[in-house]
Length: 104
Image (tube, rainbow, N blue to C red; front, top):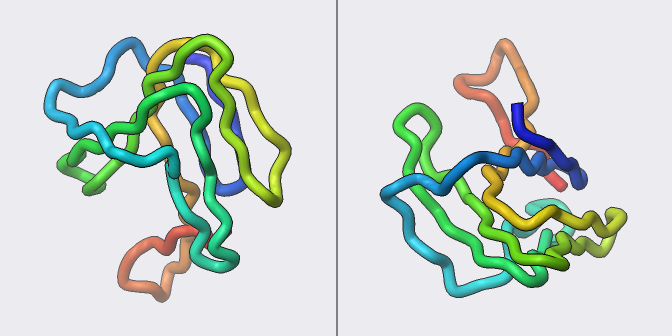
């Protein structure tokens, strides 16, 4: 398994390559928190999105030397150069029709 990093409700999982079908986003915001409006921001890298059949849209990162993820309420993390899948934490509620995103 590739190296993993965590910041709040996001997990960054190192992967070998980006998906073939992807779209580069013109932003440095990986995800904006629903509860506070604070954002997880990528410094020194690119953000892509791709549709994963079983989940829907998923963000991916291509990081360069010195890449960081910054957030107002969490400690800054440094990512090695490479490719990452961004995994959002979900909470399980057996009575809900679907799993819910954890609000950050």
